[in-house]
Image: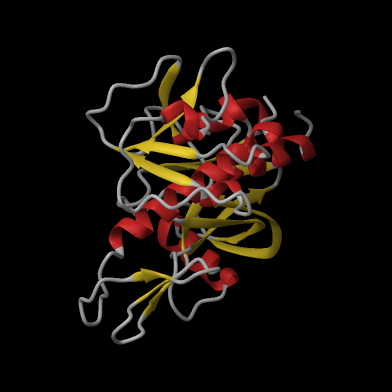
Length: 265
């Protein structure tokens, strides 16, 4: 479902109960507007709902013990894509990250004074020592490694049972995206790569990442998993794939790209 029209409503916003998003389910799935939640207490960190703000800036934190308004239900962030569309998923992820950042930055990390919002900027500042906090974004690489028409897929213990995906990892201080990619692949499966090329990127609010996708070719070495991040890994031909991630992730986009280029849509 394309939710662009709903996101264009200047009264709509993202209301969370914990890490679950409140949506209207009647007459069809959509974001709530302010009048839907009249009488419910917002946390003191919920911002005003200015019409000049982008949708993901308009969030509200609600108490977990509140009775849901009629015709409303709670959904996980991962479910938002399938229910409301990609645009709503990205804006909901932004709203959730801003809410969590705001909650964790009530007080200055340098002098412990209470932080205040900087008007017109997505930032908080200490009025005493002028320490400024911005929402964190953690870059991470994700890579589809190919070898002679096969794709490297690996399994982490954190995945659902039977699920495999491509390799990914966070960028460390002092690294380029490419060097982080080479390090992660070597650390996790002990192989070297070459011909690294950029594929695309995706904001990913779990917890506050920017996933940067690449393609690469095998350059040498035999698979030897680290036993920590990765418990199994192997080369898979298009006709023999195991369970793979759902379509909301850039990992699936990279896998689908491989399949499209290797004879299986």
